[in-house]
Length: 162
Ligand code: COD
Image (cartoon, rainbow, N blue to C red):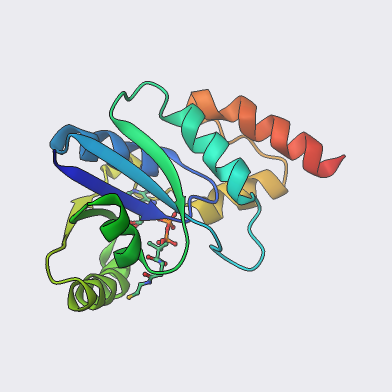
């Protein structure tokens, strides 16, 4: 069975992430979305919330599993018996960091490969940072995150405010 891992912070998941998940899930038997436990010091959504949002957003995909990971990505790959990592590229500015990470990861785990999927042009401007900014200012995230995840995000935000 060919297992792929799509790792990230997903704070929160966006339509850009969903596009990569859907396309990645087409080329492997199982796609694990690996959610980094300590993504930043001050995430807007905690681990449990990020997983709930991803679970709602990917409910239509039978071969996708959402799992938390901490520590090194390569250790998570070994644990999951996976050798393929998916990453999304939005712009040239993503490339330098992605190349560095792919090369460092392969140095640590030579059997693995990183597969880059170019963003769908309609999602190229979307990022978790922009979604958080819109949320902080009370705007609509309707065109930025999967419809199935919006209610979960709204519920979480209401609880955070309360
Ligand atoms: N369209 C397409 N792709 C997109 C879009 C979009 N609109 N938005 C984001 N993406 C892609 C990103 O390019 C990335 O590939 C992926 O989605 C996830 O993005 P984020 O921002 O949620 O996640 P990152 O980039 O913060 O994740 C970083 C990791 C968690 C993968 C990384 O820090 C990591 O592996 N950490 C563990 C420690 C480790 O092993 N470090 C590396 C040692 S070299």
